[in-house]
Length: 268
Length: 332
Image (cartoon, rainbow over all chains, first blue to last red; front, side, top):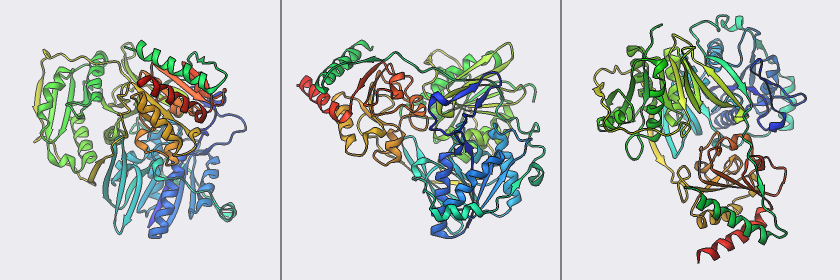
């Protein structure tokens, strides 16, 4: 089983709102100083999924990250978790903010790798929250796709996926090769072992450029992308909070119940 | 490609007729005709869907294209992708709208890839800019920490998924006129690759979270399954629904179908009671429509208080038993 996992380096999603800032003139997020980027949490779950499939069915896991040269760090993390090989795809000509283009570049990368049975990635990257890379790649590669997986069962030449729905789940079956996007319901990603970290440090991680994968024309008009970003800004969700007072929990509880009842009758 | 015209709304069905998101989208589509030009088309796919076409017209469709086909249920997303791709090409559609639903999240990027269209996911607002002759979409990014406003490209089809309940109301007019066209035989079937084996509804505990007037939700600070018993009891006494933020779901304390936030459900109750929820932005963006947000947290600096109307600084374990006692007393 040849498994490819796509991972993305992102701004730490647990960053407190106070550390998050936007350059509104250039419509860009300003990376906070001293806080390193992390692997997109859903992608970490996708690595976990790949590892469990490998443990059950055998195989080899290659991790691919499209991004800045610094994406080497997230690839190394995947190697420490147990992936077998890693590749960084990076080129100054790539517009990294456009996932439509990312799908094109990653498709070219997959073509260069050649052989694969399964491509896994997170349900969405936690920066731009789109979740389109996997499904678009499925169209480019003409392979089946299942999104939002919470369970994956590989058997011979096909795969069964349990897909999370708003009100339940559905079971889908696809022939291999296929693409699956993994949701957080799949389970927690494992913590790399000390031995895994030591091994990963020594691993050679090649960096492929646009030329290496034949993606020099990535920005052409066949990829209209997501349209022009007109504005990027930080919204204000703030409300004026009335704090209830009381010495003891009993008093606070009474005040709270009174408040809830008054709101209930106030609402239409 | 320069003279694209008209809007396609990809219809979905709910328990009683058209899904509410489809009704919303038809209303939205009518507002966008000043830039889209042409007509509002609705596509309905499934077994015997013709009976819903009239309702589509009443909510704003000029033309309803129905595809009655049972096999659509067996290969849902493949089927819809072919249908949307073919229809948009044939009709030269300029804007394709769908809900950010189980279907839309997967269908939109696939259809966009085939049509080489512009794509915008999970929008909370879409409007037309008549001067620039473009559509403008607003969507939360970075887990809701920022908002991105993007514009369509002229001469390229725009494919947009819209978040449930983000647009204000819709108008039902039974005197509206429109055409119903059976498109079943015109659709050329493409390759099917993903088969649906089964679909199971997992019932939410208690009151349905999306329509509940009151929601009591617990967060990571609840600390475990046992703590949620207090949340449930409070929910029952207030005749409300029970919800949770991301952590309790990831930790397995509660079922994922009660998760509220960017990756869960978007809710807008009259009263939202957030218990031991720190207030991560990705959760906050799911509750913004709430009329009144009440927060209980032992940390006075918790972010949740910044977005709340009423705050109680207390340990929920000490506070809730008294709240429950009060409510029990009141209901006697």
